[in-house]
Structures are given as C-alpha cells and as structure tokens.
Amino acid sequence: MDLQNELKQKAAAAALEYVKEGEYLGVGTGSTVSFFITELATSGKRVKGCVSSSEATTRQLLAYGIPVCDLNDIVGTIPVYVDGCDEIDGNFCMIKGGGGALTREKILAEASDMYVCIADASKEVKQLGKFPLPLEVIPMAVSSVCRAMEELGGHPTVRDMVTDNGNNIVDVHGLQIKEPTRLEAAINQIPGVVTCGIFGKRGADVLLIGTPEGVRTLK
Ligand code: 5RP
Image (tube, rainbow, N blue to C red; front, side):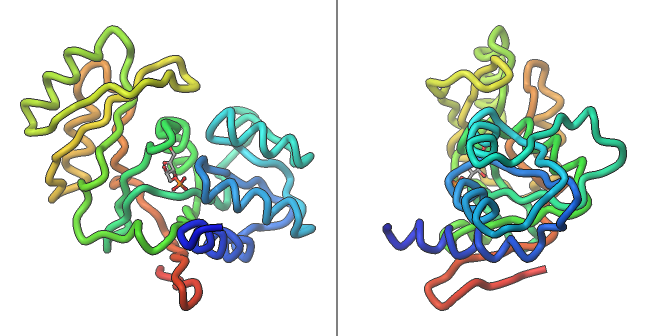
C-alpha cells in the first residue's frame, strides 16, 4: 500500500471511536471511507443501520452484511456522519465531490449532528480552490452553468460520468475561494446547479488527519 493510502487507512480506523453502537450512522463515499467501512465491518461494532451517500458505498456496506437504511425512514437526526474530503481549510470548510457523490453527501451532512471528516495530510489547505470545484448539474443546464462559472472567473470542464441521481458533474478549475460560504450560496443559486461541492454552511465538526507520525485530531 502506498503512503497516502496508509494515512487514509489510519484516519479511517480512528473514526471508529466516534461510531455509536445501536444508533444510525451516516457513511460518505470515496477511498478513505472505503477503508472506514472495512474497519467498521471487522470491528465488531454494531450500528442500527447505515445511511449511505452513494450506490458504491451501499454495495460495500451490504457486501459486509451491514444494514443500510433510507434517510426518509429515520425520525430525527443521524448522530454521526463519517466522510472524507478533497480539501479542508482551517475553519473546517471543505471541497467535496471528487467521487461525484456530493449531493447525497451534503444531504447527509446536513441531517447529522456530527460530521467526522477523515483524510490524509495532503487534504489540509490554507485556502480552498486548488482542487477543481465539482458541481452536480441538471443535464440540460450544463452549458449555461459553465458560462455562469466562467463569469465567476472559473474554467469549467464536464466530467465523463453520470451521478447516482442521473446528472452531470462540472469541475471548475482556477477559483480563488476566499469566502467559501458566500461562494457556496451564490453558486447554489445558479439555475440547474443541484449542489456545489463547497461544504461551508455545513462543514466538518471533527477532523481526523492521518500523518506519518499518527492521527491528529482537530475539533
Ligand atoms: C466523494 C467525496 C470524497 O469524500 C472525496 O472525493 C475524497 O475521496 P478520497 O477519500 O477517495 O480521497 O467527496 O464525492
């Protein structure tokens, strides 16, 4: 395993401490989360059910025999949501959506009491924006959303994928994200944008960073 994956695995293992047995658990998407699911499956910890943020995560959970529930069947909030990120700043604002699951991830983050972010050390940044900002976009609006993003100073490219919701992903390069929450709100107002990959309004609560020296916990 390469170093980056080792660090992802360390952070993923550390998140087990936050899992509440007998309660619902929100589960994100991506390679770090995939390590977390394996850790959860082999830990002996039993949750009431997982609420999944993607078809890929659902498949992995079910393959381990971990029950998966529908968010609509849950009354109240999910106590803990474990997910990764593509970038995270000092205020725990993030860019997400590298795996294209940003909309369901944002729904689960918003529905949860605590967002535990698991990441390797390369994800920590001073300012968001080096990682191209993913947007989930309704297919008929791809061109108009791209033009709107050019007006905001970005360079959009259309990703060769269809999301679990049947939409497109536009990756916006070259944005200087100085005020994440403000830009998140502005982009979310563009007709055709389902979700923008800035998680500023609802950022992380706990950050577990895998480093060569061990896992750093930031709150
Ligand atoms: C998926 C995400 C992931 O959390 C993000 O892309 C990080 O992925 P990885 O753990 O593979 O580095 O937002 O939509």
